[in-house]
Image (cartoon, rainbow, N blue to C red; front, side, top):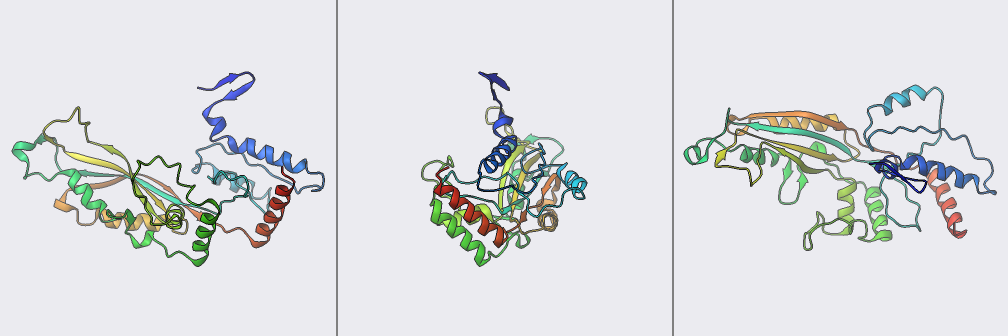
Length: 292
């Protein structure tokens, strides 16, 4: 719960979704404090406090103000960057997302596994069979061609340049169990996987009781919530159609297979213009020399 202690405000929102406002004000004040910079151009601020990377209102706000503000540079204070104070970081891409509930139903009610084992197909078995259509389970790669991309030489160079600066530090804070092998053979591979490559995770289950509460029953259905992170350059609607085609065609054992509760977010990739990149390099190096 939010609290005010010794004139300071403590709350999740202050440190999470609302950090952009404080960062923005601090950045503008820092610019104005530089007496040798001169008068800065007009800065228009859009404060939109919905979920971090997904807002149902942002497009409306942008359409509303497009005739009032015509910017030549848009800066979005959002994105995770390494904790490296010697480097000015900026983000030029964001993965897309498709999440949905995949439900397999085989019975109208649960039945005893001793009597009916070997007769009724297990819904979890069918879920596994379906997921193999869209993911290679030996290496965790999404196997739908429409979801994959061939990396450009520039993207590969970005990955190498990133690793040259931070090494493997960007994933050392992941709390994996010691000895777990990550999804990549080199730090560059791991970075490119997490930035440009699609990935699949099961983030929720339904219809499966806990071990403490289970019984010798063949369950009537299994539902899993599937979350696909998609490469920034792919159209999410095309990927959605390909996923539906893969999962719904010819269901194993003619089971009932449904996809429900979609959440879709289009990714994007917008490289920094060369003139802006050059200007940022000059300014960041100048600030570093002042030891600010």
